[in-house]
Image (cartoon, rainbow, N blue to C red; front, side, top):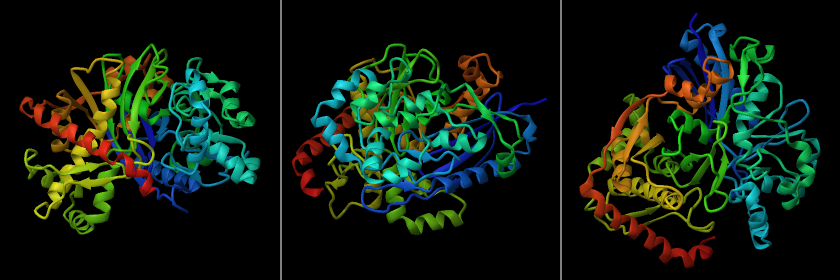
Length: 503
């Protein structure tokens, strides 16, 4: 009897579900948008109950579209965005809107902990930078501003843990996700009261659910969830993982020589090692494959900037593309391809949702003149995103050599012109994993290990991961992109003194 795996991926704005064969073939995909709520400046939230409803709709649709007998789905596994916070009561109901990983309300706590030296003192255990949308800061903010919410809350969960709870009725935290929250000791892989006490949130220990690994079975589909999703009651559900791990698995990252770039709302640049980098990178967390750590340099400086531009300035083109059954991003790619990189000197700082040049840095276009067109602006956006990734890559090169090939996933993976800019800037070949929903694929890989379809992650990846294309760098573009990247950094340095004036 054929067996299938179901992967579920809850990103920042979209809930997706995909069914895969055991050789990695993507049988069917379904998705639902989940709108963000911005009650005031710097606050970014989501209706968690609605997110579950949308996810259930996507699961139901994908089961129907796939034509697969739900009894033939061997395992279900979830992935999702890391950080932010999902609080539930003892019955599993949200006690407030989820707070997203792009939220900035707790910035004052981060600045205080930095001024007091707390972040440096606790870094040997957490192995990561602290930032406003991590649960440590958000829990402190909720305690001080919404004590009634905290009193009603039973568990703090990450996005995919919340969805898993709705599927199984069992509350667990999962190691990869929780190891990126500054709530635990990454070196030991366990909760550590000293970490919570350092941030002044020791009383939050009661909210932390038991820890599980990505390939642990964490319950089974309940009768209620089966009725809502079309899945079979009793189907096992695996622990799942942080979305950065899912992309790593779907990119075939199983050894230290490899490097993965994720071009999404967040621009993530990551590799694995059996030795953690305790200080010096944005985040070190536990990887899904036991015995490995994942070192990440990233920020919200990536493809979300292009999405913003499209939504604000290409609404007519977006509607026209929809009527022609094509993507507006195909139009963007054509416009960028029509420009000559040697003639385009407009610089874009991709800091609409965050920055890797200081918390106050803002997005801007520099160098515009009357002869410039939308095509020039789009090229500047494409290049600016690549340069933001290059900034993180420069830091990673302090700890490892550049690989011969980079595996790249996310929105840019669908754009040949953008991939060429990445290859030319990095002067490294870029490989693209096969498939459209790589987060869901990474989750499905863990599910396959959890239910015994594969003996380990290596066997699962050998069977389920393949590559669809490879982009070689143009050696003649090396000097040009070195000059452009240097100019990009000079603009950031020059504008640094005025950022606070714009806050």
